Length: 231
Image 1: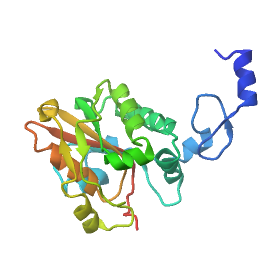
Image 2: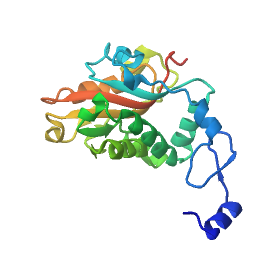
Image 3: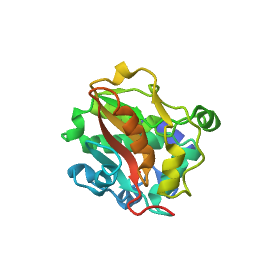
């Protein structure tokens, strides 16, 4: 329960909404207005959603969901930019909690492990963190399964994929991933997580790498999904 000291601290050092900079209660991330503006996909409610349809053209994915739609200049893009480049890792916790609450009593409960899309070690050093780490860890906590961050690795450094078309992305990312110890994943249903999915090339390349392991099943969960391919 908040104390007078807590009230004083909040008065002197208020918390601000990461969407619109309004003052918000302590230990919250977004104001109620910004929460209401987030474009939820609710894709976990259907296994014939646009995301799974996209991915299954590229890899035999079991289930796929994304928390929000990604729109150019939209609120979700703004938040993911902060998560990715401004060290706002608390947003990863927020997104993981939001999605985890939606996935209770869903087919995703059959997943055994959560595996993040890794950064190449050079980019990890430059950025200092993987933007999907907190998202994946919080989602694992919500689903009560293990988070395994270092068994799938990205051994091939690639250029930024943002301005590339589907074929260019596929060429860049081809054979970029490998697994350190396949026995960790053997026979498991893996939930592969990333921040934004656009063409699906990165996730499908990682999924196809994992699916070479005996008995592996792969599903996908992301923070956002660009329903229309980004330019």
